[in-house]
Length: 507
Image (tube, rainbow, N blue to C red; front, top):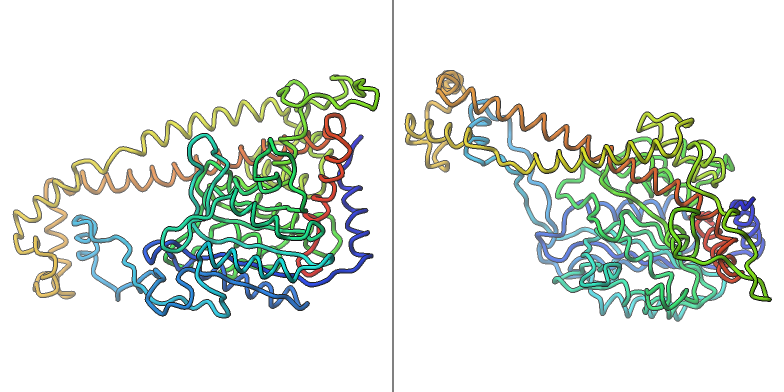
């Protein structure tokens, strides 16, 4: 039986015995304009700098390209401080008159030690500079916390990083730039922008599976698939529900906002690998993301699952005869527990963690998981359709009645001058407002909307967890079947990629 863990462990041992050089870091962060350069992106870069400072004591060279770079204009969107306590009456009026939206402010970003703006030309020159200094035992780590765009036309995997001034850096262009990195230097990518899964295709020459594998050693951990937006990008920094906070937090033992993180070490060796950090993010994150790794993209190109699809022929020996039989291939069948036992410690941790969150017994047959997933996805589609309905007329009706009885409220800028809205009299006004004919319908609509929003979020999260689980189970079986359908060179490349994924930040 084929077990990737043993090969990976051997390669990791060999790499460690050879010793290591220096780590070179490249961080691409920020938005495309002040309105799209949220404070959470700045906070992510600051957190990564802290992770490197605390968990990577060895010398590094770190190039950071963020937003508008050295420009001292106000380029960062932050959440305005909450106003001092306001009366219930004002709070209700703010909602009825649609004034309760989050207010934002702008300031210059505060990311220290940057090399320039999030500009494709600057990034290219920075990468060229790094490539010239890289030697055989060095390593290049690339972190992206920015915005991303979907692929266009027929090439949906050619997604992009959206840079400052709305410039774009595509996956294929970035893949071409990575060709400058010496083939012996591993490249580790951690990307959290929307549609970032397209960059998993940088493992292929020219970013195209048809062109075969790229010559260099590239692995990546991506927050989301190539065809879906990712979570994150907020003007406030109190909420850190996005992939890279979980990923880097796994090394720190706490998230960006300070939430304690435990039980990340899957193989009990006392250290946290990139693969283990990714597994933690897959299991623990409360987001819409379906994270993936480059090796998973590799397996879906070069392996097969019996009875699942037939895009890859069986391997042949030197005489041209097929070595295995179709019956030798693993099926995506059996219990969830049986399949998980075929995987690496990180894969088993993901399967066990996800089934626990979904309240699915490990003894369940995988066919049951597919049925439950389909039902959940149907529920998600139904909930999404119903959630597209507007607020209805209840709010407009109440606003009309309020203005009819208190015409002075139509000019919202004058509210602070109205005596009946002063703290000592506002409760009387609030009681009068609640007596209006439309108030009861408005209040019920508010309660129904809140309940529907909470339900929709839970339904979508459950749907995402099912998709993460099925993706994990597929990956395990693809890995088992790789020797039957891949060439020796492809298998060796896969094992090398696994070894890099299971290496450590601190080396």
